[in-house]
Length: 459
Image (cartoon, rainbow, N blue to C red):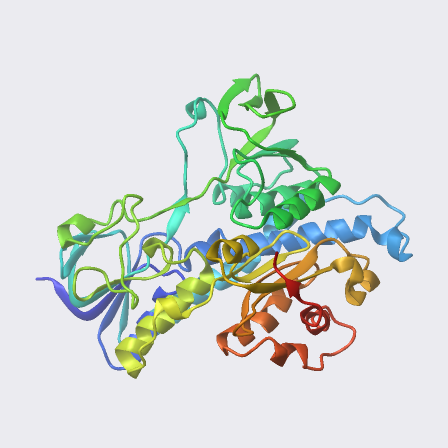
């Protein structure tokens, strides 16, 4: 006989554990299923491990620049990659084990370790056990996309997950993909000491950002010695002895790049292909993302999809917000919706990019009348004092409503500064609220009011 539950959660990423514990706390009988590592992408191969390694890379970068600050270091700077990995692994282990113990010690919650597959709308098979419930919450995340590049079967390649097992310094790392994941690894390993080349098929990096943002990021990376190959329309892989050859068809430069290792960072796909969704009648789009409405309900009553697998966001914070939306609607009588949230994310190169709302290109495309403010980090006292003046800050405002439409902040501490703008956007307050605020000196944020006081028409 199947084990019966009130609710079953599949996956322990950012949304699943919090939701399962919340449901169990109401007295419901809940099961949560995990087939691999507790905590999902963020804990094991995403945010936590990569940002831990970014911190190690920054330490090396600052140490090399110590003389710029009047600090003399007699010995040369060396990076011990095994110790970098050990530090990263220790941080990950605390988070991973913390999630596992939290779930296993929660009353009314049963943890199953194995692969879940739907047999019908209300039943899944986990190993040899059948589980039934009226409500299912799918939180299975995504994985790195492996494109069908010519010659890909001839070489050994890395992705964001397998990079977590690297405990050595690649001689020359070729990163295929000039977007968020690829650029973070590119700068990280350049700072560790690798030669790095980024190969991107589009004419500029991070295509979804404004052109001035893309160009500024390109300059930042090239200043650190990273080679950038753009417009690489025909990418193919091959071997030359122990080396990897990447064939590119770029507008200029050599037609091949030769390196020791290659990292594929060309997007992600949802982990939905082996869930048996067809047995439950759950609809997915052509890329495999589960189709959901504004409250994260699939087309099948009682089946929800949260996190990366629903295509409504690809970040830890959007996944956790999915949990908050579902819990609010089911348990609190609070009608929250996905469409209520404002686009917000960061690119964790150094200095970081903080983003909120619309880009300048999107505002122009909308045809609305807007104001724009822009300030280089060379005119931000805090950045000058710290000797890190790369980048700029940019904000866009609706002329009629005076509400902030969006911002792109590229510079030191801008992954934190962006929230001073984001919160005002959520409050639906006019930009003058920030402009007239008295901020603390010396900070980066104190220049946001100054920038807002210098708005000009977007021409």
